[in-house]
Length: 317
Ligand SMILES: [Zn+2]
Image (cartoon, rainbow, N blue to C red):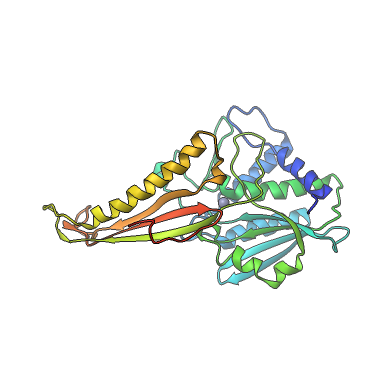
């Protein structure tokens, strides 16, 4: 059984006491204003897929780490995808260490649908900051660094070493980030006894700590059917065939979500199913619509998250 070291609890307290700018927030101290300003600088780095600016994100994090006095290493398990590893060496480095993880990349943002540009990190009169990646999960990295900065300033010296890993590609599966890092010699040498990663966002200064996460599984569903002119109606079209799968997935999703709504299970205890992508039709370069032919194929990607999967060919019949 792993006992949480005092360092972890101290760090938790520091994390929890880091004030986020919530709606209606009054004023912040000079120190808090500087923390928020550093957070905004990180948020202004364009880290959204499909072209996250990892070089700029890594440069920012390395500069922050050096200003705090952390040992830093920039690893690269895939070209153009740096992984920043920061270390605060404990007084007894032989003990199992603590690893704090956060990812540098963000999901895409459509500027036209935002109140403020998604990478401007605008802070409004109520103290709210608008930025893609603010919650998922640049706030995590900044909280780690600010907590360490405060602990160092207070004279605290950890018994165990504390490492912070800032990884690429989490939003697209992590194959070139956390997966390669966790299989590396550098990871093994860290001798990690306890690790903390992202959880769910909180609108308050309270955070739920989870001790497990579900694994993602992407299902690519391709439905085929009879093609034809777009002005006619046919039986057995690809869309009809896809609907069978959509309905099965929707029914299963409702059965899982109902358990959450009724309070019998937590979000983390059910299997989530969500369509994330659909593709069909033939784009036209002359009109704003697809050309008027009924598509031969509809493709849909469903993402499932569960603690484990048992495969069956019966999910979509
Ligand atoms: Zn995340």
